[in-house]
Length: 70
Image (cartoon, rainbow, N blue to C red; front, side, top):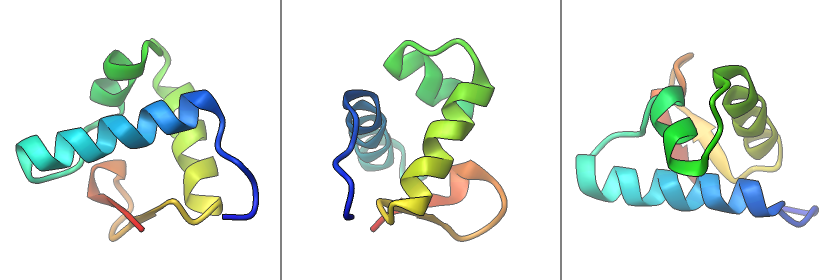
């Protein structure tokens, strides 16, 4: 990753890491939003898209629930 992550992006990554450790799969957009205090799923999707562009996460399918940490 060439750009530093924002505080919100770091919180999202931490949420995904903890969720996968606890549940064995990635969280939904709503679950991530609840974890980091975002009520808009569009905002969560935008942040996940940025994290994917930065190479911090990858999706194996079209759904964000399929995301994995890099």
